[in-house]
Amino acid sequence: MTAPAPPPAPALRIALVGPVAQAIPPARSGSIETVTAMLADGLVARGQDVTLFAAASSTTAARLHAVFADGYNHDTDLWPWELCELLNLAAAVERAAAFDLIHYQAEYAPLSLAWTRVSPVPVVQTLHHAPSPTEVALWSRYPEAPFVAVSRAQADLLTGLNVAGTIHHAVDPRVFGYRAAPDDYLLFLGRFTAGKGVLEAVEVARRTGHRLVLAAAGNEYYRAAVAPLVDGDRVVHAGEADLEAKVALLQGARALLYPLQAAESFGLVLIEAMMCGTPIAALDRGAVRELVDEGSTGHAYASLDALVRGLDDVLALDRGRVRARALERFRPERMVDAHIDAYRRIVAAPRPAPGTVAGGATRGLVVRHV
Image (cartoon, rainbow, N blue to C red; front, side, top):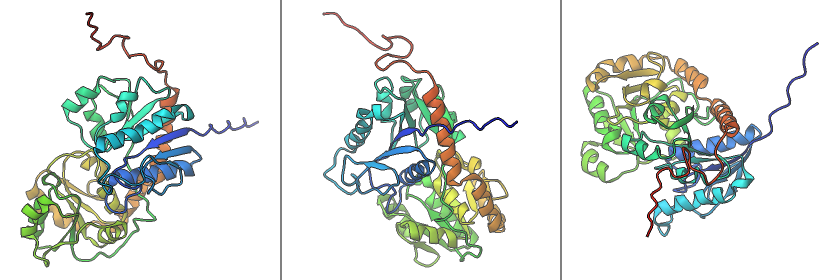
């Protein structure tokens, strides 16, 4: 006789705290807001009870709690930005009794660490950058605080911290649709900074004779260093792309150039391109090799010279195979289910009572009698 199936686990009550720089999802660029929106909607679709703390201009399937009508990127009266982030996070902690856990998507730094020993429920943090050793040393004052890393490369940097899970971002295949036959250009899509490697992307295009489209908002670095290289023919600046324009650019590109000069913890544009069937030509930095399947969805090279020599190999990759592999690895359902598993582990783990300090009640405390 077959044993009855166990009853389904009760829904988790989740406070998901997004950045309040702009709406979730963003009208234009904003990888943190994009991933937060996908996670919130995916958790609701999986039957979880989710409250999203974000600007009122956000659109979500979750319950929305807004401290601000719009983000501080749009409302210049909201200053300083750190206080805006803090007040939005505080709104979730003040209502902690209504949740099983609070998950903070850190725009810049894990401000949520300060509530680790105050909140009656676990406070989880996800970073979206590659932290420095100095940052990690500061955060280690709260070694019990759970982090969800976005890549193994990032998890390796969080030495001494409580990494409760490593979960890759995802891309919606309904939005980033497949295109078998691209146009004839290479694409650079990202912020104009030295670390993103835009000058190196221009060099690759020049040395290989390919047309290059640059898609990002103009800034001081663009005007000083990049604009003199843009001729409107072989090197074109398409400006900052909204979602529709970004998808079209990725679908039409023969390859995405990703010649990073500074390591990053993820690189959402990589998996967005792959979901469209567009292969990757990248430098081997940060999480690149973790995300790009060598010889299947792209190539990661040790140097710019090697990338130039190998570009034809990237262009020869089968776009259908690139898309298929992206569907296997980066569907939203995988990301959402992995978060639910991590949340349940975190909620079930023993933790000290609120107000106590891990490792002893006087750890780090100096008492001065006068």
